[in-house]
Length: 433
Ligand SMILES: *[C@@H]1O[C@H](CO)[C@@H](O)[C@H](O)[C@H]1NC(C)=O
Ligand SMILES: *[C@@H]1O[C@H](CO)[C@@H](O)[C@H](O)[C@H]1NC(C)=O
Ligand SMILES: *[C@@H]1O[C@H](CO)[C@@H](O)[C@H](O)[C@H]1NC(C)=O
Ligand SMILES: *[C@@H]1O[C@H](CO)[C@@H](O)[C@H](O)[C@H]1NC(C)=O
Ligand SMILES: *[C@@H]1O[C@H](CO)[C@@H](O)[C@H](O)[C@H]1NC(C)=O
Ligand SMILES: *[C@@H]1O[C@H](CO)[C@@H](O)[C@H](O)[C@H]1NC(C)=O
Image (cartoon, rainbow, N blue to C red):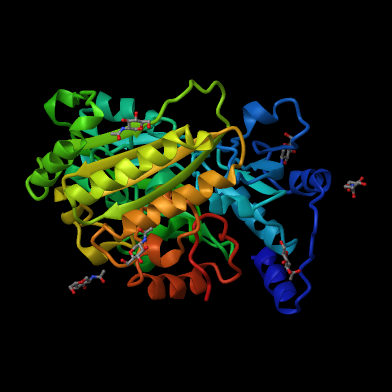
C-alpha cells in the first residue's frame, strides 16, 4: 500500500519521471533489491537472454525490451507494476509470446514482465476445474487433463500461451463443442493497472471477468486462471484428416461449405488453406497477419476473391510467402453462452478468415496487399464494417472491430476503473477515452 500511495501522489503532482531510454542496468539494480529471491532479471547482453526470456516468435513489428523481469511471486508482479508506474516505464506482460498483432510494435525499448515462473497446472477432476499459471501453454495442459479423463478446448498450436489466448477470446478446433476458450474461464487473479491484486469471478468483480473474457490484455496481468474442464469424448481421441484439392475445385468447396452452415456437427471443424509456394523459403523471421469474419458464404464472390488473390500473388514476388485460411466452426459451442456473457463478441461467424505473409523483412507491399484484400473481403462479408477476431488481427483495425462497437463503451468505462493510467496499452487495446 505504501507503494501505491507513493505512485498516486507522484502521478497527481505530474512528476512521473519521463524516461526517453531506459537504463537496464539501473533497473536490474533497483528491482533486484525489492523482488523476492526467486525472481530473475536479464539484460539483452546476458548470455542466457535467449534461453531464459520469452521473445516473440515473429519479428514483424515486434516489441523490444531493454530488460526482462521474471517475478517469482504475485507480490513481485505487483512490485514491478508499481515500479514501472512510478518511473513511467512502458512494459508488457508475456506468457507464450505468441501474440503477433502489429500493435505490439508500439512498445520499443521497454520492460518485459515475463511470467515464465507462473507455470503450474493443477487439474481438480472431481470439480471439473483446472488452475494454471499465466505462462502455461496449450501443450502443458493436454496431458494432465487426459490423465484424469478430462478434455480442455486448446487451440491448434501447442506452443501458444493459454492465458494470452483466452484473454483475447480464444478460438480453436474445439470451439464447435465448447465455444470460445474464454467461455470456460471461471475466475482469474489479476494485478490491475493500480497495482491491486483482485479476483475476477462471477461473485467478485464480475464486470472485470466479463471484460477479460475477450479484451483481457487491456486490464492487467493474469497470474493464475481457473477454467472448467470437461469429460473427454471418444476416449480422448480426436481425428485429423488432411486432404488436397486442385484449384479447379475451389467453387465446389465453397458450395460445400455453404451447405454446412447451420447444420455442421459440433464435433467437426473445417479449415481450407491456400498456400502459395513459388520457391521454398529458408528462414522466415517476419510473419504479417491479417484476418476478418465472414457472416455469409457467397460462392461466386469468394471464388472471384481467391482468383484475384492468386493472380496478384503469382505476379508479385514479394507476396510469394502468403497464406490464407478459411475456418468453419459449428456455432453450437459459441451459442451455448449468451452474447452479453463476455466481451468476446463474435458468436455467429460463418467463416473465420485468417492469413499471414512470411518475409525476411518488413515489406510495405505485403502490408498494403493484405489491407486491400481485406477491404475486398469486407465487401462480401455480410457486414458493413470490418469485424475481426482480435488475436489474428493485423493490428490497425481498432477496438470496434476487435470487441464490437456495442461492447466498447462498457469496456472503456471498465478500463478507466481498472487501468486508469493506461499501462496495458500495447496489445490491441481498449482506449481509456
Ligand atoms: C511517460 O512516457 C511517455 C513515453 O513513453 C511520455 O509520452 C509521457 O509524456 C511520459 N509521462 C510523463 C508524466 O512523464
Ligand atoms: C545506468 O545506471 C548505472 C547504475 O545506476 C550507471 O552506472 C550507468 O552510468 C547508467 N548508464 C547510463 C547510460 O546512464
Ligand atoms: C533473500 O535471501 C536472503 C539469504 O537467504 C535472505 O536473508 C533475504 O531475506 C531474502 N530476501 C527476500 C526478499 O526474500
Ligand atoms: C494461379 O496463378 C497461377 C500463375 O498465374 C496459374 O497458373 C493458376 O492457374 C492460377 N490458379 C487459379 C485457380 O486461378
Ligand atoms: C444479458 O442479457 C440478458 C437478456 O437481456 C439479461 O437478462 C442478463 O441480465 C444480461 N446479463 C449480463 C451479465 O449483462
Ligand atoms: C467495396 O465496395 C464498394 C461499394 O460497392 C466499392 O466502392 C469498393 O471499391 C469496394 N472495395 C474493394 C476493395 O473492392
